[in-house]
Length: 165
Image (cartoon, rainbow, N blue to C red):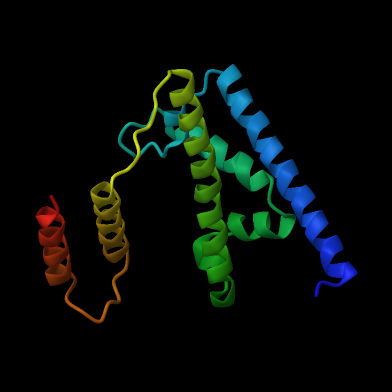
């Protein structure tokens, strides 16, 4: 079913994945050794963040420094200098910056909780549903081109969320 070339590629990808996991674990250990709290990996605009504008810019810059040179060049361009054909790629890499930092923030928060002896309770079905409604609400609010009345939709969504016991 699988060719030798495919299996070799799977092995290489697996090794790279494991190496990435180990590298991120060492990063979490480094954050801890440097007394970096998970809240420092939240945007300074986020409630509960301990990041400053300067530290946020530094961590984002360090993430970008790990990208390929072509991506770094694209991200360094002023927005109005980016070709229309490159805008989706630029948007993707900007999202990756936040995604990467977010993954580290969650891992560090989980590590902090474990060290503090905090045990996360299992999420109930109701909590999962409420979280899903919240995620839908945020997604709808981020976009503007919907084929329905957003205010009506959000009102109905919030009413449905309140009905959950």
